[in-house]
Amino acid sequence: MKKQSLSPMIILMTFIVILCAGIAGCSSQSPSASPVPVKNPSAIEPPQMILQPSEIPANFTLLEKAERNVSEMRSWALDHGWKKGYYAVYLKNDPASRQGTIIEQMISVYTAENITLVIPDTTNIYKNWTIKQNDANLTYEELSLPVIGDSSSALKISDKSDNTQMYLISFVKKDVYQDFWTNGTSADYDTARQLAGIAAAKIM
Image (cartoon, rainbow, N blue to C red):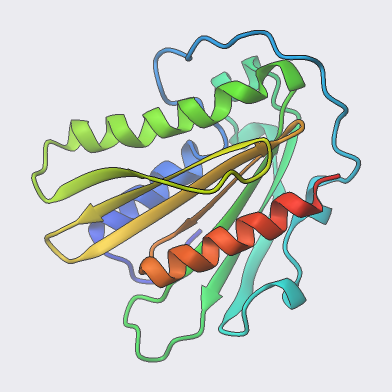
């Protein structure tokens, strides 16, 4: 789906994002969760949750967007009440960059009783992937983050061999799970964090 020439670490992470982020079906065990009260579902559909051009910084443009289909989802997501989803990819217009910076917005709607499972499972996916690589150049770091939506998390994976990094911001609100990831710098992470806040505010 990515149309840029990215580093090997970013290519691998892109593959994982496509399969797992927002799907939360890659880890072998699901974290246990306390019962949660049934919440009112979101009043808007996933396509309406996609950021609009006026909400995106001027140095990013929309590259592509589309619905997420059942055929793309892993069994974990379907077994835990995945209903529907949408995604969008934003490209940073930076002629000086050889790789290009991408921010991806992934949206999934789940049943309310399972929505709290998704963030812990997604975090474990990336943590376990980093460990399994057994590569001293790869580092995994969980980042502090002001709460977005009902709950949220952020992490960073770096590859010292080529000084690349990938940031992931995840949040849930009502019955919606979203994540934003970028293959750029800390400044691009701050942009993704701001966009996640805007996206959360759209969910009513």
